[in-house]
Amino acid sequence: MARSGPKSTQSPPPKDAKRDPVAVGKHDAAQNRAASFHYHLTDKVEAGIALRGTEVKAVRAGQVQLREGYAMVKNGEASLLAVHIGAYNHGSINNHEPLRSRRLLLHKLEIEKLQFKLQTKGITLIPTRMYFKGGKVKVEIAVAKGKQLWDKRETERRKTADSEAKAAIASSKKRFAG
Image (cartoon, rainbow, N blue to C red; front, top):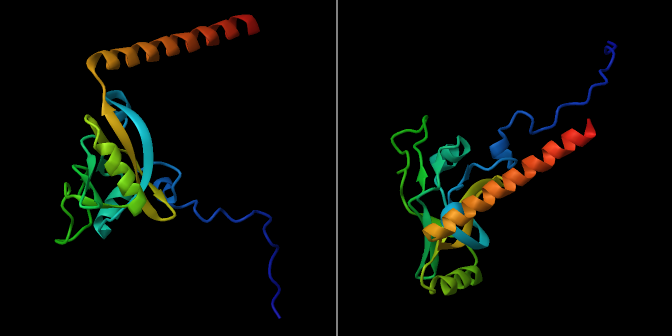
């Protein structure tokens, strides 16, 4: 009977070490950073999205653009429009269209709530981020109202004031600590 050599004391690497952090769900596949600048975001809803195989692979590769996208509710169904999911590099002739409308997977009660909120003038649904959760692609949809130009300026002023205050606190801590 052959004897096995000494066993290593190193623990095996975690199972998801080789996988992409986007696919595992640690990072977002796409974010709409401009949404909070252009809109007042109120309620956020997590929705599934019906995608084709090449679209899922393109999302995993980070080929998603949410900036121009919006969602709408019509005939009891929610759909995502104008979201660009780039063509998959290794796809065949059956590759998807980049700007097709995609069905959002929501419960009927959630769709009714969103439809009620959309009846108010100036309210729209904006996709804020796309991510993986449990191997499925999810989209975060926010109820949004457009900002006026003065609102955008006020947001910019607040950001600069906050960053200046943080910098002043950090410099005073350095000065008194040393």
